[in-house]
Length: 263
Image (cartoon, rainbow, N blue to C red; front, side, top):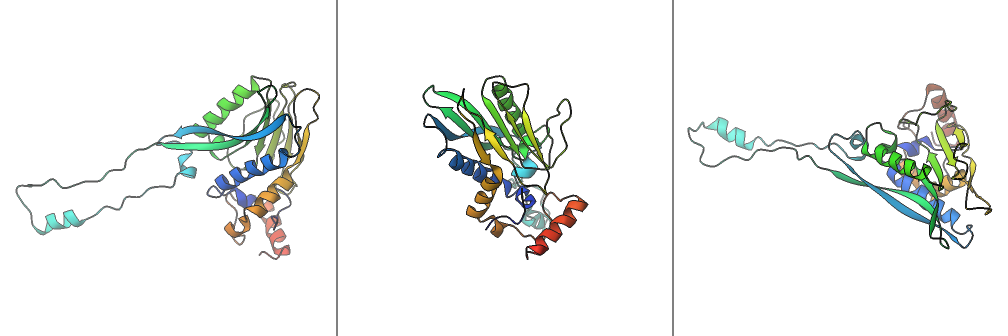
């Protein structure tokens, strides 16, 4: 069953669901590319690992709040009978500060003959777009490393919430954005500004030298991921998406869902 939306399904952006969607999109991109790549190329999933410390802005999304329920048993005993001397220390409670190790997957295309990295394909996660988070720092460090080389950079941002990098001149405002920066033409990147009502584009994944780029229809990739992962079972389309749509897009989405018989 495909998503009821013509392009990106805004209900997939829910922070609790997106990590699964993120990994599934990476997996489907790999499955789409490998059968069509020339024999000397291979698409492989890699992982970028970073540590999210206590107080990191990304923890509100990835790490659920912890609550401690204080026991009143000891206090009740003390109030019942005051004692002059405490022979055994009573235990108290405190919240341990801890670090969370986060692993984010991304896709690479490698030239096996030359043992060289050809392209990096990133699907953004919520922490990648949160100012001050370790996830954004890790993502930007990887991006700077790639952009300083001749490796192609493909960035797929299907999240409306969060900060995008400033550009000069400013890029067309949009709900979603896909960028392809070729290693041999770094100063002239191509990008697709995409609104929630639009279909996702087919983009070209560049390779080495005169090898033809591989066309990938992101709409097909998304619907395949949606169907195989049965995301409709995890979504309640009777509720607003998280984050919410604009008022005009809300009216459009409500009419669309009613027309599909989902509302």
